[in-house]
Image 1 (cartoon, rainbow, N blue to C red):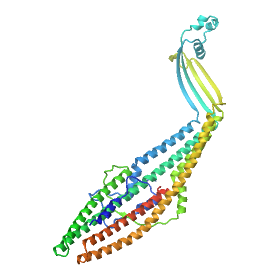
Image 2 (cartoon, helix red, strand yellow):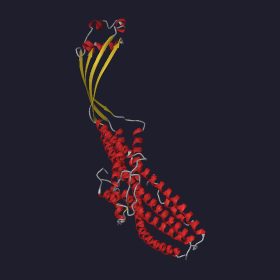
Image 3 (cartoon, rainbow, N blue to C red):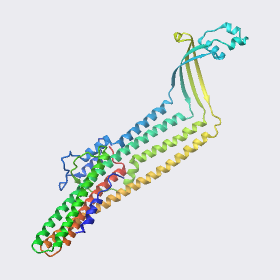
Length: 477
């Protein structure tokens, strides 16, 4: 009896931790192949309670529409585009309209305001030698309306470097968004497969309950006929209790798997739906070297790092601009009036100017900025190398897992066939009274273990295929 327990416990362990994991609505051929990997169930594994059906394609579409993780990445990409607009804006003219109101009895300002308003007190100029007259002027009010235009002409390369940085940053963020999109698809497929695995595990557990229940009836009949002892009946009943307990646990695993799927779809975790089907086994063969080459060319996160490296490299030019002069021009037109009633009626003036600034010495600030930008660029180049190595490792791991699962499927298929035949023979022997209940339960345990191993191998194969597609950057439109 107790020999069933390790296999039934393995039924629970068979369900992976679905809450933790390793494209536009129009899906690519790779997505179509993944969707086609789910077939109708051979043994009628269905959802109870009449919940609405949910296909893998619908689950992916729902996630792409509602995933908060993807929405956050899309907002980051939009924010990066505004930085491009900001960088471009620094190259355009700056136009400022201002209104300044001033009232003062300061001698210099009061006199200048008269000039600006084109109102001249000639008596004041005649009394310039009278200090008391000059130092105690009547307070004067000035309303100045001014339109000013400023245009940078030369910035030592700072403007162009800044725009290049912003554009490269936006490209990097777009690649980050694409990788998040692929991650969302991968998580949905992985957890959808997990629901199928959990349902299949529950189905196997329920079949085990039926099998052991039949053993109980057989043992009771044989006991009444005097063929077996009472301990056979008790052993069968204890085994039945154990299998029922494990069937309850397996049912709970289905609920947990569906909650994980809901989480990655971006919907309420209590949402009910029916997932009907099983995992197809469609062997696919690739060459590892070609796969690694493809991944290095297609992975969005690697492209993100490459664009980030180039943006950091342009920061060197941005910092070097501090060594060069800056040149700009300015034009303004102003109205100076004595009061609101006289706006645009008194003094008018314009100003044209060209400005050049060259910092001869800044305490080695620019030098330090250039060195920092250079070091950051060298760091990004090392990060790029590490990312490439990591991608190659991910592809290799998925490839080997796929190959191992493919071999396990062939082995477990034979094991199931052999376990079925062994169970049939031993059941016949038990009914004939030539073997014990212990041997019967051992045969059931072997068949249950073989079936669970076959289910797990098929799940591992399909999951490894999706992991390989994810590692290659294929989960896109």
